[in-house]
Image (cartoon, rainbow, N blue to C red; front, side, top):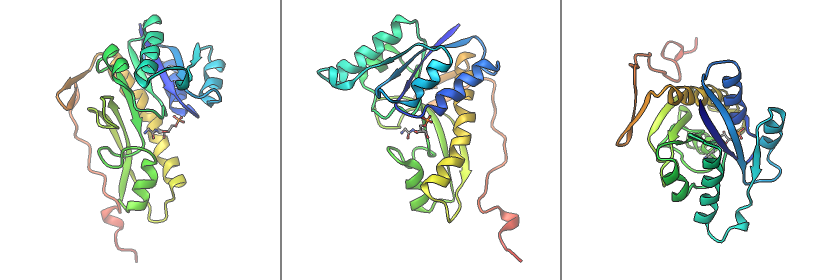
Length: 221
Ligand code: GAR
């Protein structure tokens, strides 16, 4: 049984998506063992309560250094036998003590097609830039900001009149699909990090390309 620890700072809809996938059997032999939050009023706490999942609020200011804070988080997770850590809208850069305790066992979801638009407001950056396709990425976490090996991505067409809000909403739907899928692949032992690449065992990509605007609709009559 894979025990999962979730780190969240806010709404927690990705946390919910993973819980739902465990509940409905898409992810087998896994359970969420702990939610850690850095915000006492994170809505993710309500979701943990509603699903009888233990949670702990850890205030960064109670620790002398950032490393000490992440050491504490690592201890909390290790005490509960966690084998996979999910950042789900956790708005801090993870430090070495947590990464060392869980080598290639910390995942993050980011609302853009990395390596484009890392950091905050990935959706706003994409909408402002004028890209025609953005999306979301699940990746293993390394010391950089949104730089670790990529596990799965979903491409989402961008509309010329998209705002940060409208694009975020459409991307979020796909976040909720790909995060549970990445967890499933991990739980099934199918992810292997080779340098910068994640090899997925038993999988060959042969889907058609997404083109936006779609070729056949390019000329409106
Ligand atoms: C999600 O859109 C996630 O991709 C993003 O924060 C949101 C959290 O929503 N994360 C980042 O921007 C990390 N750089 P949620 O709390 O409802 O899962």
